[in-house]
Length: 448
Image (cartoon, rainbow, N blue to C red):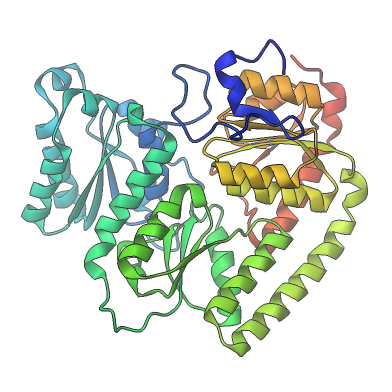
């Protein structure tokens, strides 16, 4: 594996044919302290899940840097309010750390309610609040009683776990929001909720349109293009479909336990996964007519796109890709997409993947593919050089690394401005990969 790899990290890195240990790759654990992790903090995990709720106020109780770090970081689009694109902070300073910041938080909530007539507020407790011990829950409860609106505390000090823990806290917050609207047991449920899709570049609108074409109603979305009024209708759905399992599987399980709504994992990345997901939902919810419409839709789009991709195969076949994304489910879909293009995945890693997801990854990659959990930049650099990757698919933190190594890059994270999901996303993704990987600029560059 190389002397460049830290001993503490070797159990989280494997080559398919060599394995890692009798129990598989080590994953889903707290990050190593310092700059040897690409994961974000607990607070960031909670904020990125809740932030796309379009008409909610997000008050960050902490230093101004926490609010600026997560301000407008998703390419989530809205069909209504754009309030979510603002960031509010209590801007805690030295005096507040000594004497406490609860009074400052109370004043912030008062100002938001009185100035903006807020009806839904999320309050995030950051690292410094976890240290000084402000009772954020008590402040939020008092505000709810005073103003008769929802003020939900999200106790997410960044040091208290991993980004995945932040996802869980966000799911708990959403359950507190929708729990009072639970239906009686004899009420008929209908339609679907879409969980774990954040409407990046309008992708949730594409998915909703597919279901509209085959006759299935989308009740609520978590949390892309969501609003207070839409979210509280979620308990009436007959099925939850989970796009990003890492961020929303916990919510799906809670809704099954408390509301009796079953769930299924889906993926709308790539031809194969998009078609399979539409068909599974149709077969789960629909009658023969709905299933027939789904068959026609998926066949028509699959034929069109396979013909489209044939034009690009000669330019992409034989190329090598490295993948480093947030969740395992997305990595699996990307590997399948690259397989359809004739591109070999030589390095694949995730920030929050689980053992069962890594087992699926092992089953669909080549024998010498390197698999990493919670990689750091040095590891990514080492293995991309070793495997001679032509392109890296990742997020904003990985872009500079790819360019310094003189290889192509594709942004598949939440800052992107064009859809990569659904059938339309297959076209966009294929075009972007081709333009990036075959750009003549790489012939003029050498790695730093």
